[in-house]
Length: 495
Image 1 (cartoon, helix red, strand yellow):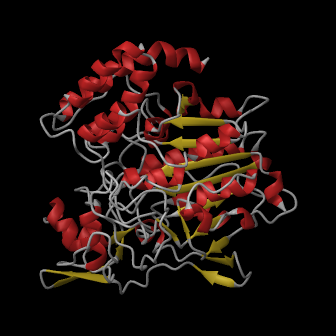
Image 2: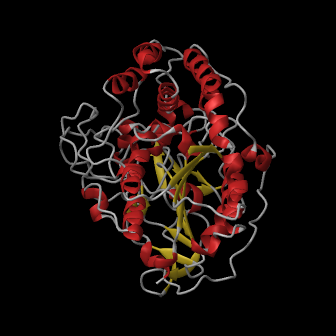
Image 3: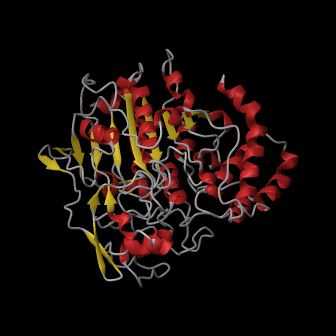
């Protein structure tokens, strides 16, 4: 019923948190979204544990606002977390048996050896009041999985294309330079942005900083992107002509994520809480609230413990196993660990818990269902859409206008979340390799913007400029150069 009333779909994707880490100890109860029966979330009992060096480490409430070390979450590290020490993945084969027994061992091996037990600390409801309030008020999905047992970049691609075009690892600087040599990283069947554009359906992208990762995709234009600081003002206007809106937080990737709003483990989690609050309240306070759907999720589990066993998945079927992007020979026939996911709309009954299986391909599947688009790959064709949650014939009027204040213990996060990007990017550990986590992806986003404002004749030199990046300091210098170069065009589009 309510699905026909939706005119604006907003999607916010944050970073690197598992379901149990964020919501496992909340004890949320509600109504089963599928059956209408009373139910509770599939969370933690307190008995879940890992053993490392002969010592048991049980889950416990009270996670720190900022992790002392970044949990590893590349393909091999997730394999260790899910399957335990000694597990191996046979390229092109079946994923090994999962027991979720290697999370503490993985964290210790990746720099967390001085306090390995912190990996099993999970947030209580009082620590994350914004997230808990939304989960209790709308729909929390407790069976939403990352699209593959691996890192940020390919998982985010599944949200945009129901595929990662075979990519099963974080790309390197050399790889992104090579992609641009052959006209950019592409998908056999395009992205959801391409599908919308073909039907004349409008899109808008907001970034918490100047280089949102989505802007690395082929077909995304500088004119599509606005800074998140303009989001609330845009929604306060009499008309808002955009149907699909994708929102990214800020990352502060070169500075170890310290001041970002993405909820990356090295950032203060409260900054991300503030970013969620600002996003919801801008939509809730607008004239477009009654025809809106907001989906909030996290790209992957970030190396944090989750007790659920990731099930088998349908491979996208759009790339061959020996794809040049396929470093591990992964078949994409297994989901990654669970991540939090909230579905928010006045056309949804209050306090639902949805136990049905979802992954990031459920986002394009939902957009396809709402606007009559074809599936991009076998993954979204098989995915569950969220449209059945939109069951009310008319918008309910009891949704909160404002969410609880953020429980900040370190910063004034709301101001930080809403601040404009800094004039320059700072850098920590400048001599370290630029092939570090999300940094190459941010460089790729900058590269795409650089190429967009430069003459075609300069393209080879720009790509070689990026190919020459070796250290974090090199990467930051390039990001700052591009920021200055594209500033006039960005200012013109912002008017």
